[in-house]
Length: 170
Length: 142
Image 1 (tube, rainbow over the protein chains, first blue to last red):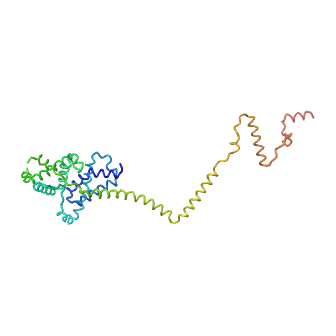
Image 2: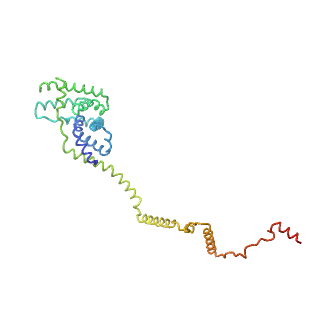
Image 3: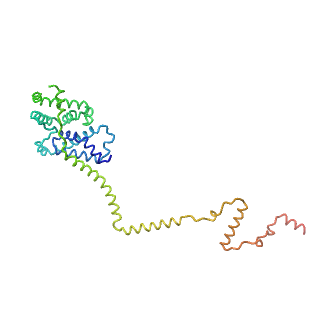
């Protein structure tokens, strides 16, 4: 398989998952675009990067997580610029046609944004990528117990925040 | 609210799709990055050779032609010529070997423009060279 075709395959298989994960981490569509592009540029420059990798998706999510952390650290030195972007926070959750459901999703997006990034990353990988705690631990560079506890803390916060809406919509 | 139900409901929430225009942008950027990574190595090598040869290409061509001539002459000079020993066939018997040696000797003499020594000129043994027993016999006769 030629390198160009291989890149296309990687994009078609993993771009959606990477996009949602990065968007949940950065809350910014332009940043997500830049990070996703940087990731594929890195893959193009190092075609052997995925050799001997058992779980491509987990490895790419790990790369995306590292890139998002690097960006966040750079942004912390430019807090003013970051504050300007606060008003443009984006969410990875698709909008709904039903108004009640849309309210639920908006509140969920806000609640997710309020989670610490470490908990947000674990919640996303567990809920929307279906990774095990071992896989999440490997992707984020933490122990499985740490990943599990972060998930539990995050889910508890989301549940508390969404309880009124959840009970209404049931 | 059951935790499992809550998690299941969250899992069912659809994610926004990647904007369709991103695919072409990102893949183009990745391909360009790959090309720009390989292109500098090639252009550096080409520019090095160009910097070396560009100032006087005719002079370099002349030097290359002279070297080709020198190598050709050297090759032709080092080609071994057939020697007399190599030409002569292997001898089968001592008689043939003697004949061949005599022929070689004559040939060498001819080449050196010398005349072959005759039997008359061959040195005779002098009286001083006779055995001592012969001199004793003469003295007895006297």
